[in-house]
Length: 189
Image 1 (tube, rainbow, N blue to C red):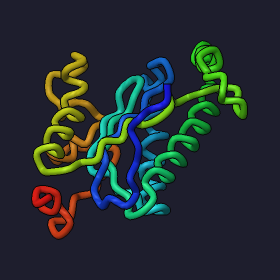
Image 2 (cartoon, helix red, strand yellow; image 1 turned 45 degrees about the vertical axis):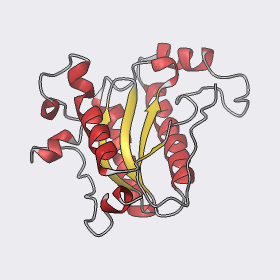
Image 3 (cartoon, rainbow, N blue to C red; image 1 turned 60 degrees about the horizontal axis):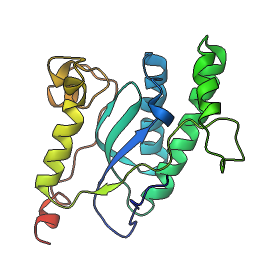
Image 4 (tube, one colour; image 1 turned 180 degrees about the vertical axis):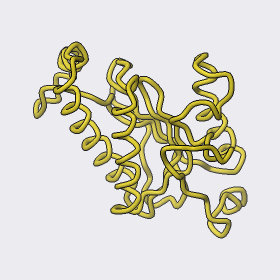
């Protein structure tokens, strides 16, 4: 089913996004697949101006709070398309053919231009409307591994921006919301 959530590129606020692997197949159980996401975070920040404020990579989905000045929907679409291609190439060389089999089996019938479907359709974009909502989404992102029973504290999950908050070794330096642009604008609306 296609998402009823849509991007509004005219809005100058970050979005809370979820990228789920089709049928919640556990792909991100090996760091090399997580590193594809991290490398693409870096690329899309540098080359396309995407800002990533918070994130977590779980075994079968990614949560993030992101912002783009004027075309976040297109940037996210390109990000998902390219990461899917890269991960499918890695899977081809691994002994995880069962994952590709499932991605072929669960591919939606209208996806006629590809053999596999890596990401579930949509990214469930939620426009961050105020500081309270932002804080709630950050807590949700960082506590995802804790709620799943994978770690005792959010800072212990390596592929999470929670590590940035604690000044710990991390795979990706997140962007910081500029105080001049921050959430104060949204609290006034």
